[in-house]
Image (cartoon, rainbow, N blue to C red; front, side):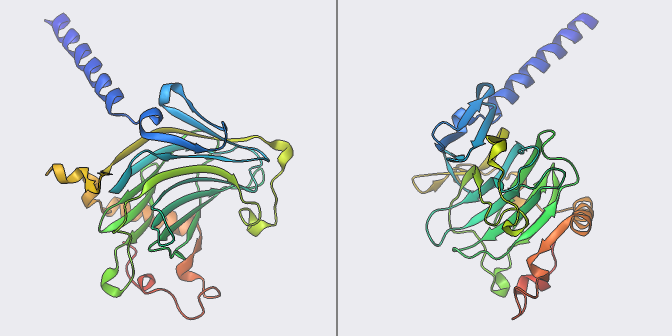
Length: 286
């Protein structure tokens, strides 16, 4: 009896592993390298992808599909050591001048100084919604998971499943919200030393190049668009990201991150916005 039970458990474990491997994201299947002339390379049988930057060029990739809402998870290990001047990105964007965009940008720094995690939300080509954070760990030592949840109600930025920012739909008070354009996932590593590190005061040290950032375990659970039709219209199943909101634990974690690790908030920059802050700044952050 014990032997049969052990065999059944082993079989169940194997089946679950196969299911996980089948459903897991794969860069060969889900993404395409779009620029960099060979500086982007898919690795580990599709599980990983490396982007490289040298003095001639950076590199980047995008998702094969467009999505209209979803949850987007990506594991990253950022450029180690002196990464000043470099930017590693993971973001969603539509096309055109009046594009929508949801940004994670990682601004490099000199050795020993923390990366700045730059977040922003664009609607119809207009952004100016920046918040920036320093992480509570070394993002170059190991992979960490960065996530964007985008639904009709709110956008949530997460790091290792901890919320760091929530941008709610405040159309009721006249604030535009990105909900009319499908977006792709884009990722890149490029040089922006005119502004990326300490406002451009610290330049890229090209003697340290090539610089490399690593991506792993892309996971997209969203409404893929095909010929103008959303894949979510073919099912009545409600996925967790479609109604995602913070519970008490999530709100406490958000407060901790924003009180301890936020280094810039557009809602507190009176020099930049002397005419007054945007209306959503007066509303609850949750």
